[in-house]
Structure formats: C-alpha cells, structure tokens
Image 1 (cartoon, rainbow, N blue to C red):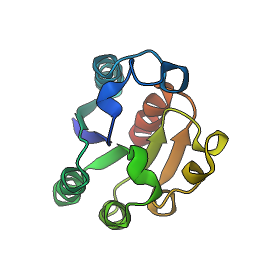
Image 2 (image 1 turned 120 degrees about the horizontal axis):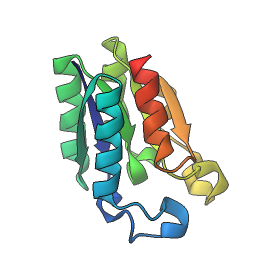
Image 3 (image 1 turned 90 degrees about the vertical axis):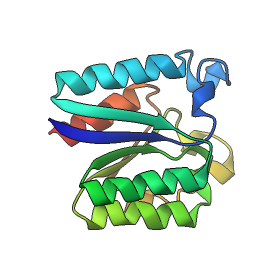
Image 4 (image 1 turned 180 degrees about the vertical axis):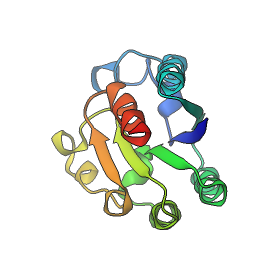
Length: 144
C-alpha cells in the first residue's frame, strides 16, 4: 500500500472552532477520519499530522524525501513567508514524488497578504477553496 503524508501547519488543530465561516465546521478529528477513509478506499496508507512548529514540519518533509513518500501539504500561515519550508518542499518534488499544496479556503479571495504562496512554485499542484474536499481531491490526484 502506497504511503502518503498529509501534513498540516499552524492552527489546523483548531478546526471546527477557529473561524468556521472560513474554515468550515468539521473539526480536526473529522478531517483525519475523512482523509484516512478516502485514502483506504484509494489504496493509500495515509499518515495525517499537524504541528504549529515550522521546524517539525520541515523535518516531516525531510522524512518524506528520505522515505520516497508523496505529500499533501497545508502549510497554513507558513504558506506566505517560510522559505525554509519551501526549500524542504522542493526536495520532495525534485526526488520525483508529488507534493500537493492544499488550503481549505481560497487565499486569493482573502486578505492581500494571503495571495502570495512561496510553496506553490515548487508544488506539483495546488488545490484551494473547497474546504475539506481540497484534501480529498489531492489524495485522488496522488492515487491517479
């Protein structure tokens, strides 16, 4: 079974209670259940993780490179300024694996500072604005 890392950055553990009008009412446990459930249907072994730590997220990307794993990445606020995360993300795609950037909301319909992603330019693809479905679309893309 192909293993995929689904990595989530800061504040994603607050889903369901943090601005549900923007991020939806599904809590983090619901996201994990939906992602692992679809992953199993698609023949993927999905490991879902969340951290508020930039260095931990970078370490997980290094783990993906070393393990030859595809990645679904919601970098959250790190999207807009973390060149260290970008440098780790590019290693995933340069290793021949997929890295799909996902966002629950559409950053381009929000505050101007959210319009820039330092990750998008090195990602295999970007899926944004479909809520929890953004993750499911990303897994489908990896499985296909």
